Length: 376
Ligand code: COA
Image (tube, rainbow, N blue to C red; front, top):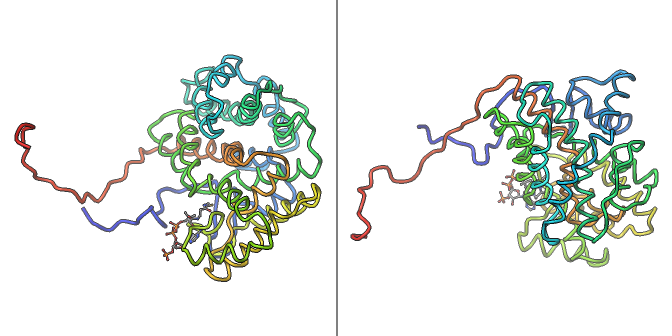
């Protein structure tokens, strides 16, 4: 075999796809032909989900039907036995572990679990996208010793999630910010978790298994887990007054700074700009802009000294923190949006499938002589 391989599959094209395009040099992100900046300005998460799954923007009538399906209590609520399973978990279980376990368990209750037809996968995608926010919010309440709240079918996915987390109706700015965050995280081409989902789907496995694989991949700090680590950094820095000295020391110590750098973007991630603006607005609304101030100082230093640019994870946590969301829920929030992309990719994979099975460049021995155990 050839020894030519790309570490981390960098720049390796593994498939065609019609779902998402990233121009890493220009800093453009496009879903099904539409620039994400336009979607942020004009669209909603629900409409973007339709776009990703159906390939085009919906008519008013189609959007209404789609919105209804995503918000129906029958689709959003969790089976009581699943809530029992959550209550049985140790309270210290991390929200990402609970989400991975919960999504896997949801397949046991799904009427279409064993059906991998296009229509059944679509129905499962609707249910899973509707259920995952309920699952994340239910765990937040259970671990704090509170009863989970029933979903409200009158609320958008964003507002309903914030309501189920806290029992308070979100402010219009919080709802809009959360909706934009959902739009911005909904898909990102062949990122690690999406690739994990596609690898699983390509064995002709089902949607729940693919999403469970994806959640496992998203959890790591080099992928979705970075937004939590950014907030831990802000907590360590504590004050804008010391941020510059702190970050220059970290750069000198060659520490990997979370929320910067990207495998594809060579310029600033287009998603970071929106999240910075919204995090700053929310910070002003709640009277605490220190996190954004710290991150601005960190960004100036990292970009100036290392020419590495902010990515999607730099400012999202500051926005979520202003909404009162605990840091270890940031990555589950990423997942409740990205499930839209994962599902789109599973459908695309199933529609034109070939098993994904690469090779390794084997570097071990090949002709060792077996030594019986009593002679080793
Ligand atoms: N902080 C400090 N240095 C960084 C960096 C960061 N966040 N991101 C990349 N670099 C540096 C590396 O040290 C390396 O420098 P070197 O060649 O002198 O060793 C160079 O840039 C290339 O980095 P590499 O890790 O090989 O790039 P990659 O494409 O494999 O990694 C990421 C991409 C996203 C994993 C990487 O940028 C990273 O770890 N970022 C922090 C985690 C994060 O925010 N993830 C969310 C991504 S949306």
